Image (cartoon, rainbow, N blue to C red; front, side, top):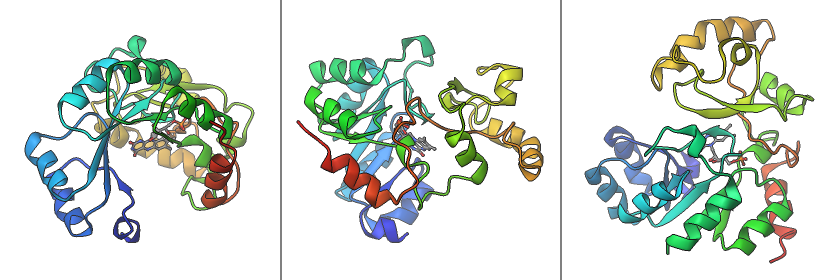
Amino acid sequence: MEELRMGGLVNFYSDTVADILEEFRPQVVSFHFGLPEKALLARVKAWGATVLSTATTLEEALWLEANGVDGIIAQGLEAGGHRGMFLSQELGLQVSTYSLLQQILARVSLPVIATGGISDAKDVSAALSLGAAAVQVGTAYLLCDETNTSTLHRQAIKSNRSHKTVITNLFSGKPARGIVNRVIQELGPISELAPEFPHAATAITAIRQAAEAQGSSDFSPLWCGQNTIGCKEISAAELTLELARGVEV
Ligand SMILES: Cc1cc2nc3c(=O)[nH]c(=O)nc-3n(C[C@H](O)[C@H](O)[C@H](O)COP(=O)(O)O)c2cc1C
């Protein structure tokens, strides 16, 4: 909650969460999977918050612009964690970061934040050179001191299999990128057996917990993007300064 007082980033979807957040008046509210219904969005905007949401295709960016966001997060295919896709569930139409960024910049006049595979200062420079207003970085922070990345998750990121990531629906019901493990290999990354979002997470919990208790990440979601080159076991502040200091535009 201290982060919220300081105007940190939050993700949320419902009036219940808005009730809790209202007193903190976060300066930036970032949605994933599209936008909430109009009344809730209007409520958030009435706080004076800058509203962001994720686009994974040009169509989603145009839809977000038409529906009142202040900035668009262009999430490329490389990104770790859940894909923000909401207009189409066709994975084959998902686009890599720099292509998506350029497609959106050509058609949208809002600030665009590039995300997906941005791992070091050279990547930041490339995104800014192409016209991004800012970048958003996830995977590179996963080994930072402040994160709650589990020991098993850290081991997988530091292992020689961290370059093998896929988009899978097995752990939540929605497509998300993580490191390949046993359950992905045995069921296939995208399975019709996975219950709808978010119920797949509940469905896999028992076996996941049993495996984790034995030191195995065979059934755990190991969220991670394609580019782990920038993952460092340093503080998030140091990493942020490294990313910023090396920028050349
Ligand atoms: C472990 C992990 C958790 C994430 N959780 C969220 C989330 O809760 N909300 C969100 O909007 N994006 C989330 N993301 C996606 C990031 O916002 C961003 O799109 C992605 O990390 C960028 O690609 P990168 O991982 O290659 O840096 C998550 C990413 C990771 C790796």
